[in-house]
Length: 479
Ligand SMILES: Cc1cc2nc3c(=O)[nH]c(=O)nc-3n(C[C@H](O)[C@H](O)[C@H](O)COP(=O)(O)OP(=O)(O)OC[C@H]3O[C@@H](n4cnc5c(N)ncnc54)[C@H](O)[C@@H]3O)c2cc1C
Image 1 (cartoon, rainbow, N blue to C red):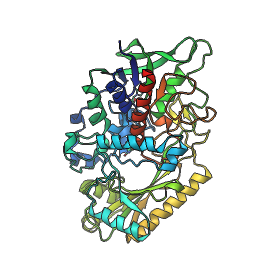
Image 2 (cartoon, helix red, strand yellow; image 1 turned 30 degrees about the horizontal axis):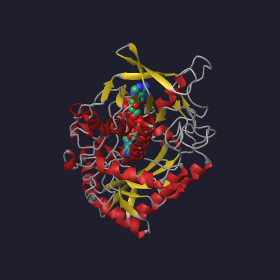
Image 3 (cartoon, rainbow, N blue to C red; image 1 turned 135 degrees about the vertical axis):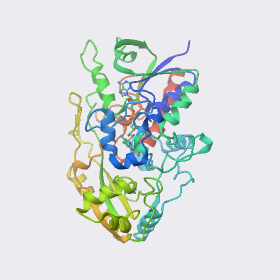
Image 4 (cartoon, helix red, strand yellow; image 1 turned 90 degrees about the vertical axis):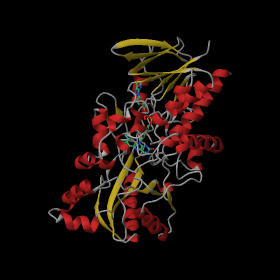
């Protein structure tokens, strides 16, 4: 009889691992607390969307039913909401994490080829006119500004329709053309006769062997009933908030402690974001094209990532634009404002990583979190602010508004690090291959394992790690 691996969660960390294991012949039972996403549910027409101008933060919080942590419960995890921009870390960061660059690169090629990522591996996407200006302005400053890597793009060979650039990605793609996990890894998983996906199934606890060196079963709740499933291994991919919570809840009878070491839940990291809404006198066409077109990775070593984001300020079409005018300019003649500024407004954004100190923690009881804005991070925020200013100046743009550079700018959507990987158990929770220190058959595949260095947008890195570490688990089970 084939060995059973229980996979908890179906986000970008867990799903590729599940595919690896199922395709290698293991019996995979994937437990997902949410449901399958029906694109028809997200059919918000563009007028309604603009009229309400809900930002993704509000919408995501409403869907998650909690504030201020943003994440989706559903098959595909938080990629149901993401816009799909996702840079990969550079070689020195990958090696600092204890991973082998060549191995990581080989997996990233397989993953990006499968999900279809534009802006990487030679493929590209057309830039809207404002992005062309911004790219040129960055080049004039001597910055290397590239086409952003995005996985939302259409690719007919992968049977997804062409993106219509509606910019509503964060509501769940109503056309199914976004390269989110529900459109990529999950259909591939479902093709395997070895896989079963159980929705509405919330993992509650892991039960250990008597010597506490391995997980033997997973207890989960479905439709108000508790069930137990025995397994040979478990992949935990419940996300950077739920995974440490689940480990803590898995108290064993002898020590009364949760599974794993005392670093669980520490080193929480988030991405702080500053937006600058600008008016490009020479631009036009900001309302058309991808939400995030161009990206400057140049300052990665300083912990700063710059990108363009048409949609980040919520300025999508004429209605939301008029609302923006009213909010930011006081009483104005809308018609003049529209004539002068509409479609010339763009957004440039900077991301900075918060400090993953021991003080940055999650509180499991009330589900609040504390990110650390140390003096180093404050310095980065100041630099990022200045770089955005320079970028706007070089593009000959007027600044219409900007967000303050402080802790309040935490995205609340890109949490990571709460079970971070490392070689030393004194400062980490899992090994670089995702195995929990001291436990033979528990692998974590989600954002909780990501150490500092990524700045923002972890979804592509997570898919590469999930693919890689799912494969390594399959190798170990076969040995
Ligand atoms: C609005 C928004 C926009 C974003 N935009 C981008 C972007 O453009 N680019 C980018 O790279 N990243 C983006 N992100 C972040 C990215 O989506 C996350 O970093 C990524 O999805 C995290 O992956 P994960 O596998 O760790 O967890 P998740 O994607 O959160 O998946 C975890 C899954 O586990 C399930 N689960 C949780 N607990 C249990 C349990 N006890 N039992 C069973 N199932 C459970 C959840 O329902 C969920 O499906 C965005 C996030 C949000 C919210």
